[in-house]
Image (tube, rainbow, N blue to C red; front, side, top):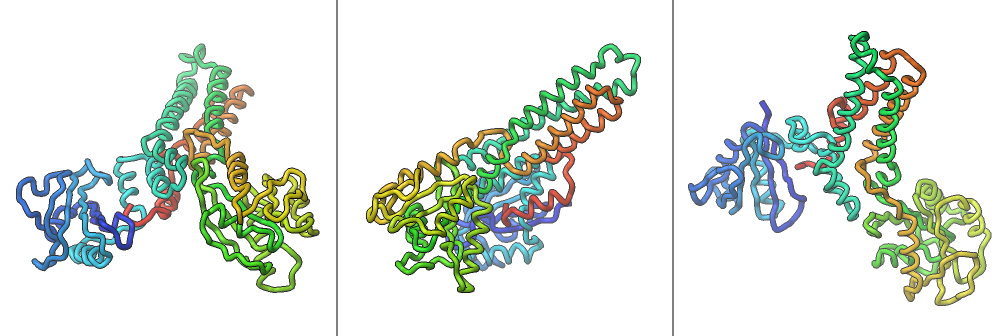
Length: 440
């Protein structure tokens, strides 16, 4: 028996409409105690939106809409209901208190989607796609999440699972009935099949693309004090987020904001100017700037266009010579003489060169693979599964026993099951759904 849960399913705060969701065996009974439809015709008919009044012991709380869903034809696979209220935080609070008073329990993060997974309404990859779609900020990320939600990942992995199961069946037949299958059991052929499947998994396991789609493209804007880093940050955002003054060292901490370029979320990190300093606060800011430089996907090194290259600027260029980077020279409205070969000249004041900078960032983003696997967890598991199949291939080639070959193939199948949820541990499930928002 599934206990009944309730939570706000829409975003918190003031809005035109707020949606409260119920799920569990007592959903309909609880709804009938707090919601009175204006018309009895089609009242509480499944998937039929009713207009009526939310009330507390005949005291009206709100004029609203409500709809019920019957198991198994609901999001969670259970009896469930939704109440569509006016978007007042006060009304939502009153509604939830009413539901809790009548026996519903507050939903935990991701509990609705977890129930959908546990009730067989979706596999684990689709469940993860729900949160990926909610949090998507770039067009490519949203499209990848929607494709996964529609079963793209599941179909890809499920088809491979069937092929791996066929390999296992052949091996087990050779173990149990060696005389009957002696002629049809071909280690060389099985090695070739394992190699083919492993290659398909690896081809779809682009870790860089998965990271960019799920986490965004990290860009660190670095340079010496007063080089124009914060002005560039504001220009790329097209808003005044960072304080800009003529006084060097204005930025003491890392400022983060995001934009979307070429369908990908680009996370801009404006850092403190790097120089020798005895100021404790400035030294901490410089330390954080260097930490951002180490983890960024791309460095934008800003050179001060108002004067020749300083010793600190030369050091930054030297230390990051092998990194993915774009070198810029600021203040082209003051000076057009380039100080560094290949640097892009720009002015945050006039806007000159900004289109070239955006194009340069996009050029570094390009190459995001539109593959079946778009989450880092799936990519990691698919790579491990491929390695297990490569081990199986080698075992077949080396003439190892059928039992030993089967162990590698079983490992590959288990890892694939962790993507779909067929063989995933309770700890992994807890970890996945703990990242969901309450109400989803």
